[in-house]
Amino acid sequence: MAVAVPKKNLADWHSPETRPEVIHELIHGVDRYNPTNLPYMEEYLLSQIKEGHYDLFANLAILKLYQFNPQHSNPDIIIHVLIKTLSATVHGPDFNLSLGLLREPTAILHDIESDDESLSILMPYLTNLHELIRTCQFTKFWTEFNGESEAANILKSRFLPSHAHPTDDLRLQFSLSIASCFSSITLNQLSRWLNLSGAEVNGWIEKVGWTVDGEKAIIPKNGDNDVKAGVVKENVQLNQLTKLVAAAAY
Image (cartoon, rainbow, N blue to C red; front, side):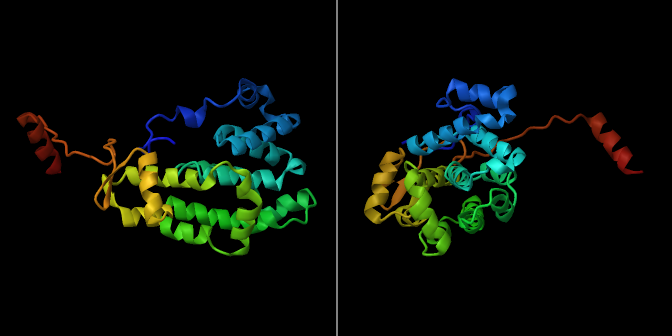
């Protein structure tokens, strides 16, 4: 488990180390828009799901191929891509970038002549979950995520079991967001935001590299949660002021 402090280097977001060279060549070369590469790209997504890796640009390439070749669209792959984006970042553009490449679910299902309504049910639900994450409404997110709605049940029974550790990925992203705002937080509040019991939250704190002090979790300083006031000195010459006053007279 990574230490939960905000990341400054976006290299992994653009070119993750786990990306195979053959996939790198496919998404950056002339074959990027070749639909015959879809099986390789979809297989790579499934490996990301199984192993817990994430490659946004490769997944966007899949959705772009679906956009140009709608007859090849796979609703299950689309849902898996959206799930990966949800658990990859709180404030990043990943989900909206993916959503921007998709048409209405009914249009997608019409093109492939599918009667499976899962995509139509899940897309609005996942969009709502994304909005709750983006606005840091973590407690409400867990209420929706753990709810008994049709969409929540489909997500938890059909799609999430394929993912390596989806809830921990979500908790890590929430922790990163918390670490950018707080230097300490009560254990009670943290347990609500991460959907963990009192006993579990202590284990999580240790896992992400924080410490416990009484009833609070102490978050290491990371440049975002320990902002210091700066003193700015201006060196203004008298002749500059006279020009300013003269200009203001007009």
